[in-house]
Length: 173
Image 1 (cartoon, rainbow, N blue to C red):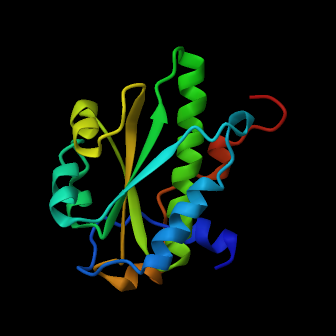
Image 2 (image 1 turned 90 degrees about the vertical axis):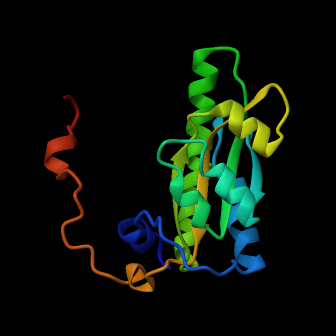
């Protein structure tokens, strides 16, 4: 899929078909996350991929809006080092967001839907995912083949985005 088409057609998918992802697709999605740009090329992320249904159901409880994780074919938890200052944390989160977007766009290109979920209960995420002290999980992606495959080709119509003339300022505000 051409890049602009992927960017302009992607949508959040929270309802998934009950079928596993092709192994090559999972690997490609993860590789896309690994290829994301990062501050000073530090690549401050690790990924935990979960596919067991019982585990996905447990993970769906880490955030108030993470219920979609329970029905996904897979979840990708983005694990980052705990930063010792606000600036470092902000850069780490920007990098994690870029990795997440790479993975979601790659999934979309493979006709796989997905969406991110914020982790509100970080201690629960740590217990379920088993990552060590000094790391944290703020973001989990759910991915899977859409329950309604027409979402992949349905026209967007009005996409709810603010018009450019409301958000772009040239040279100065």
